[in-house]
Image (cartoon, rainbow, N blue to C red):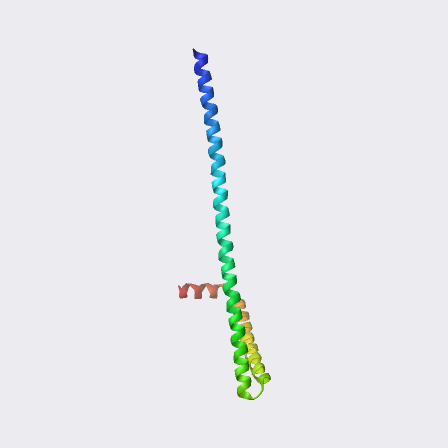
Length: 119
């Protein structure tokens, strides 16, 4: 009689261990699938942002070409329009470069104070 109880208890313990093992494996699989879904969602977001960036870049290029052609037509030669647009872009690039340089060399405490004041 006691041996039957022990065998039944042993069998139930083995089934419990197997069920627990299966549950852990399923939980790991679920976690893996959730991680894969997050990665895929991030990749989709990145590709969408990349597409929007490329389209915006093309729009800027076409707008600059149109402006150069328009200025060239107004000035009498297409080359002058492209020269004016190139000079304008050079001025903008120089301004951005110097502003970036001054912001990068500013002490961190000044940046933190301006961030706190802006919030």
